[in-house]
Length: 297
Image 1 (cartoon, rainbow, N blue to C red):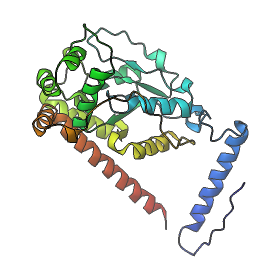
Image 2: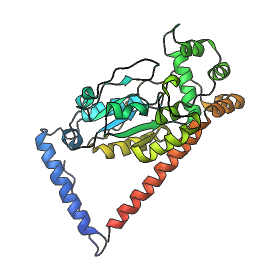
Image 3: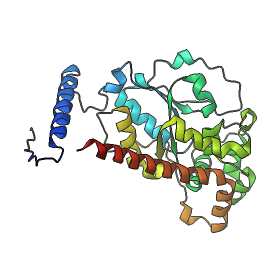
Image 4: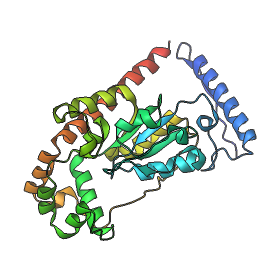
């Protein structure tokens, strides 16, 4: 069934601009429809971005427990898995051998990667990431390690999560600020070169200057919409495939105030970074709205 409508164009309301936009969009959709044999809205349908050799390329710095695997699955489904790198990690205290040529073919390079690796793996790419309320991220990580990961005697953080109460775990782990370090330098402390007192400023500057997409876990649907728009996705799934969920976890409201306060204190940089990211997104949205309004007569 084909939907039809009429448009009552009132003089000097921008109707001519909208007509040209609709005509261009319909022509573009028709060409894609014929090219892909009618699969325009199929989850695996290729998109303009994936087939455009001049399309901007990206690196997605996936901070653990921020919904990154769900986005990886979404992009693999929407763009086609050939255009998204397999998810990988450079977040252990190991000597990694990285060859940028291995990743040139991907539209998006995706993994647990500190920004220090970005220009090594994907020079000239723009950056993406997802942030989460620091308290909720720590809770999700603790309960994931405690309830979903097999016992790992050689991994101290896993063993600590499985054997210590949340309050004991928070005390044992000490200062964290995982999100700040991922976006300022690198996660493993021995490899960091940014001084601790410069980490927050560096992460904020990177967000403002290098990141085209800053998702917010607590605004997941809106983040997916913005990511889809940025990449030119024609297919927007009604339901995002959630991956790697944390089982049997408590919410922040179920945790005693003293433990919540300890988490905030030990992640004070992440708390400031999260607030900065939310405000930066708001500013960018307002600027985009102003530019759009300026186009209309």
